[in-house]
Amino acid sequence: MNLENTITLIENFQVNDEIEDYEISEFFDAIGFQLEAINRFTDAQKQQLIQTLFDFLKRQDPELDEDFSFIHLIEAIDQPDYKIYNAELLKFNTENGTITSTLLLNRFINGLKEEERKKYIDLLKLISENRNYTDLVRAEALSYYEHQMEK
Image (cartoon, rainbow, N blue to C red; front, side):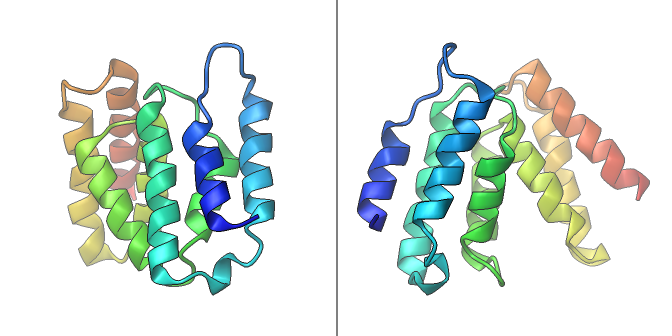
């Protein structure tokens, strides 16, 4: 399947109360399977796909449980340097607070060196204090913040 068709599928996929967790995983597993040649994508194609996936998160309930099929897919797009992904992840987390994006931010921080870590750990703190986000999202961000501070 080509990238445009895949993007259309993602744009049309909406999670609702009738969808089970396993169905979300199956959807993103199928997307990942369709994009086997992802390592041959241009930077522009990677940017477009990553943005589409973050737009998917933005359309969903911010408290939608993490889905590791989604997480592994979005993290795999821009390997091995993650420049596009990292920039979009940080931008998303400064504008949106979701359970999944906060988990992605925590995973990103786990891979950083000491000097870089502080800046992004502070972003977790900002998310935890942002009254525009739900209590659950803020609590998750605070939990990750406390975990990172203990390291």
